[in-house]
Length: 378
Image (tube, rainbow, N blue to C red; front, side):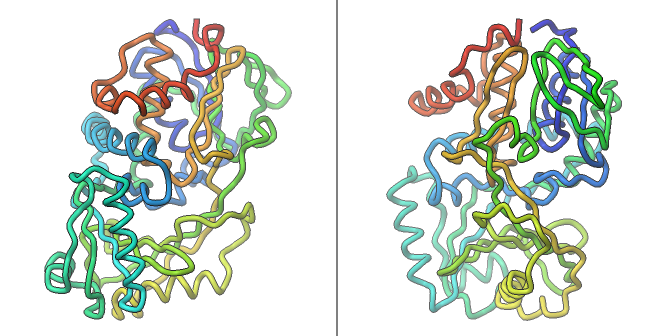
């Protein structure tokens, strides 16, 4: 694709903003269309905790996601250094913890056993006894006796990132349109029955693309945000439970994000009383001081997924449709964006991507480049 091409992007969530930024830095002209607000985003990326957790996610997914996530851990610091000219985005690099209540200790034991079976030795983390657990995180309740410290994992301030990306693309000259839903056809975005032509259209609408991509489904995610002045956590904590998995992620200004990993439902209604009680109960059992926390947000959203829970890119007649990041948005976005950019500009993949072992790199190539895309990018 020519470096001065005009690209239309539908959807201003994480993928849409990342693509806009990368394309603008290449010299392209970019028009970005968002069905909702750009500053008060309703995207799944806004209703997220920003975890970059390839190791803990590997237990419930496949090794390809782990491989991509390890690459993302190298890409994010590079990108955030570039964006720091606009504003610093908080990025925690002190790992994450996996814990379980004493009555659920068998879940943690099985988790560690599965990890040893699936992952290489350098990714299996450090098993902590009660003393070392509380030395690492003193504000975790004393009744927790064991833990697993995954030292390589990270988390990013997702809302700050979305804000900084918007500022950067606006400085670079992106034409941004909010409250502007679109429909898509060959090299065109249709806005209010007016067709606008582009050299390339990129569809990043997530669940909003379901009408055009029937395989897309929504997976419900719920989060609770609280402010707790009396509690300090240095890293995300994942709490194993027989019925559900919950996570608690520290954010700026003594805020904490509490969420459930996944709920197989396309119900996008407000959070139920039962869900609220479960989220609050998990907080309280983590540390009773959370009882005095102040709830500042309780919300749900739908994350876009495909049948195999893998991301995919479809190339067809001047349109690149990208979807299916599932619950792994911040884990997978850097690799997906980097691969698509390498396809568009016929460049060698980033060195960090080339570090993926050959079988996984081939699988990744198949779902990024598996369909003919020459008509789309030339």
